[in-house]
Length: 141
Length: 141
Image (cartoon, rainbow over all chains, first blue to last red; front, side):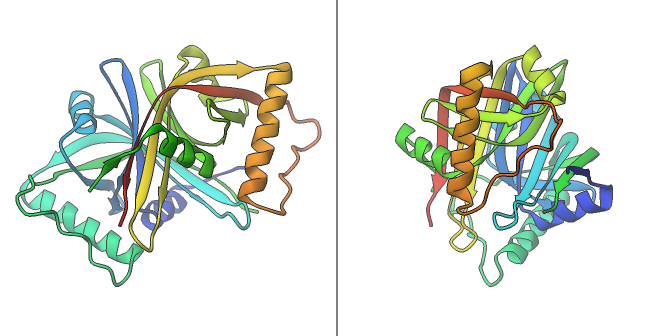
């Protein structure tokens, strides 16, 4: 039986995972793309490069973010769908986003350092998706 | 370094995984939702229930399907984005779709039987997403 998740359970899932699939729509086209994220209880933080995803999000900042989790042994799963708005970050806000991402990365892969970008590479585009609405579902077996 | 995947590598990923995130857009709204699927080399097959996702896909059959895979130990990942069209199946085509899903499920969770739907439940909506275009990326570490 599928159960609806309450907000604290959705928050728990968003903190436990590090990969979200962002859905965006611009120029008559829908796009779904996986990103690494960090969650601080209010927004998902993402660092990426200039490209199609960023172009589309700048054109239409309405974002859907999907996060899910499966247990192959039991068949249990939980998933969340978040609606929010693309907000590009600069200065101290971008630095805080990058720090949150480093923390999330360290929790997920203890003892491993995130890779530094190669020298000379353009700085990342840092943005957040502020959670306006969140729904979640789960099946426990 | 991010590498582009050739179609055989994308096919390999689509066959290895069983969860896709479908992106659709209708009534001014974008939606991303996880589904279990089976892949036969040409299309992704899905069985679901009547609901928002099916309503939206009937209204606008343009679908994006995203599949990804992460290795927490190495940090390697690969992902594919498929563009296709929603095609609802009936009769023998729907039966074949359900058989492909049972096979995919058995490969993924050997020795376990898929759960039978409770008696009296409406039959599932079976559909496929025929792959019109597929792109993939990978980082190997």
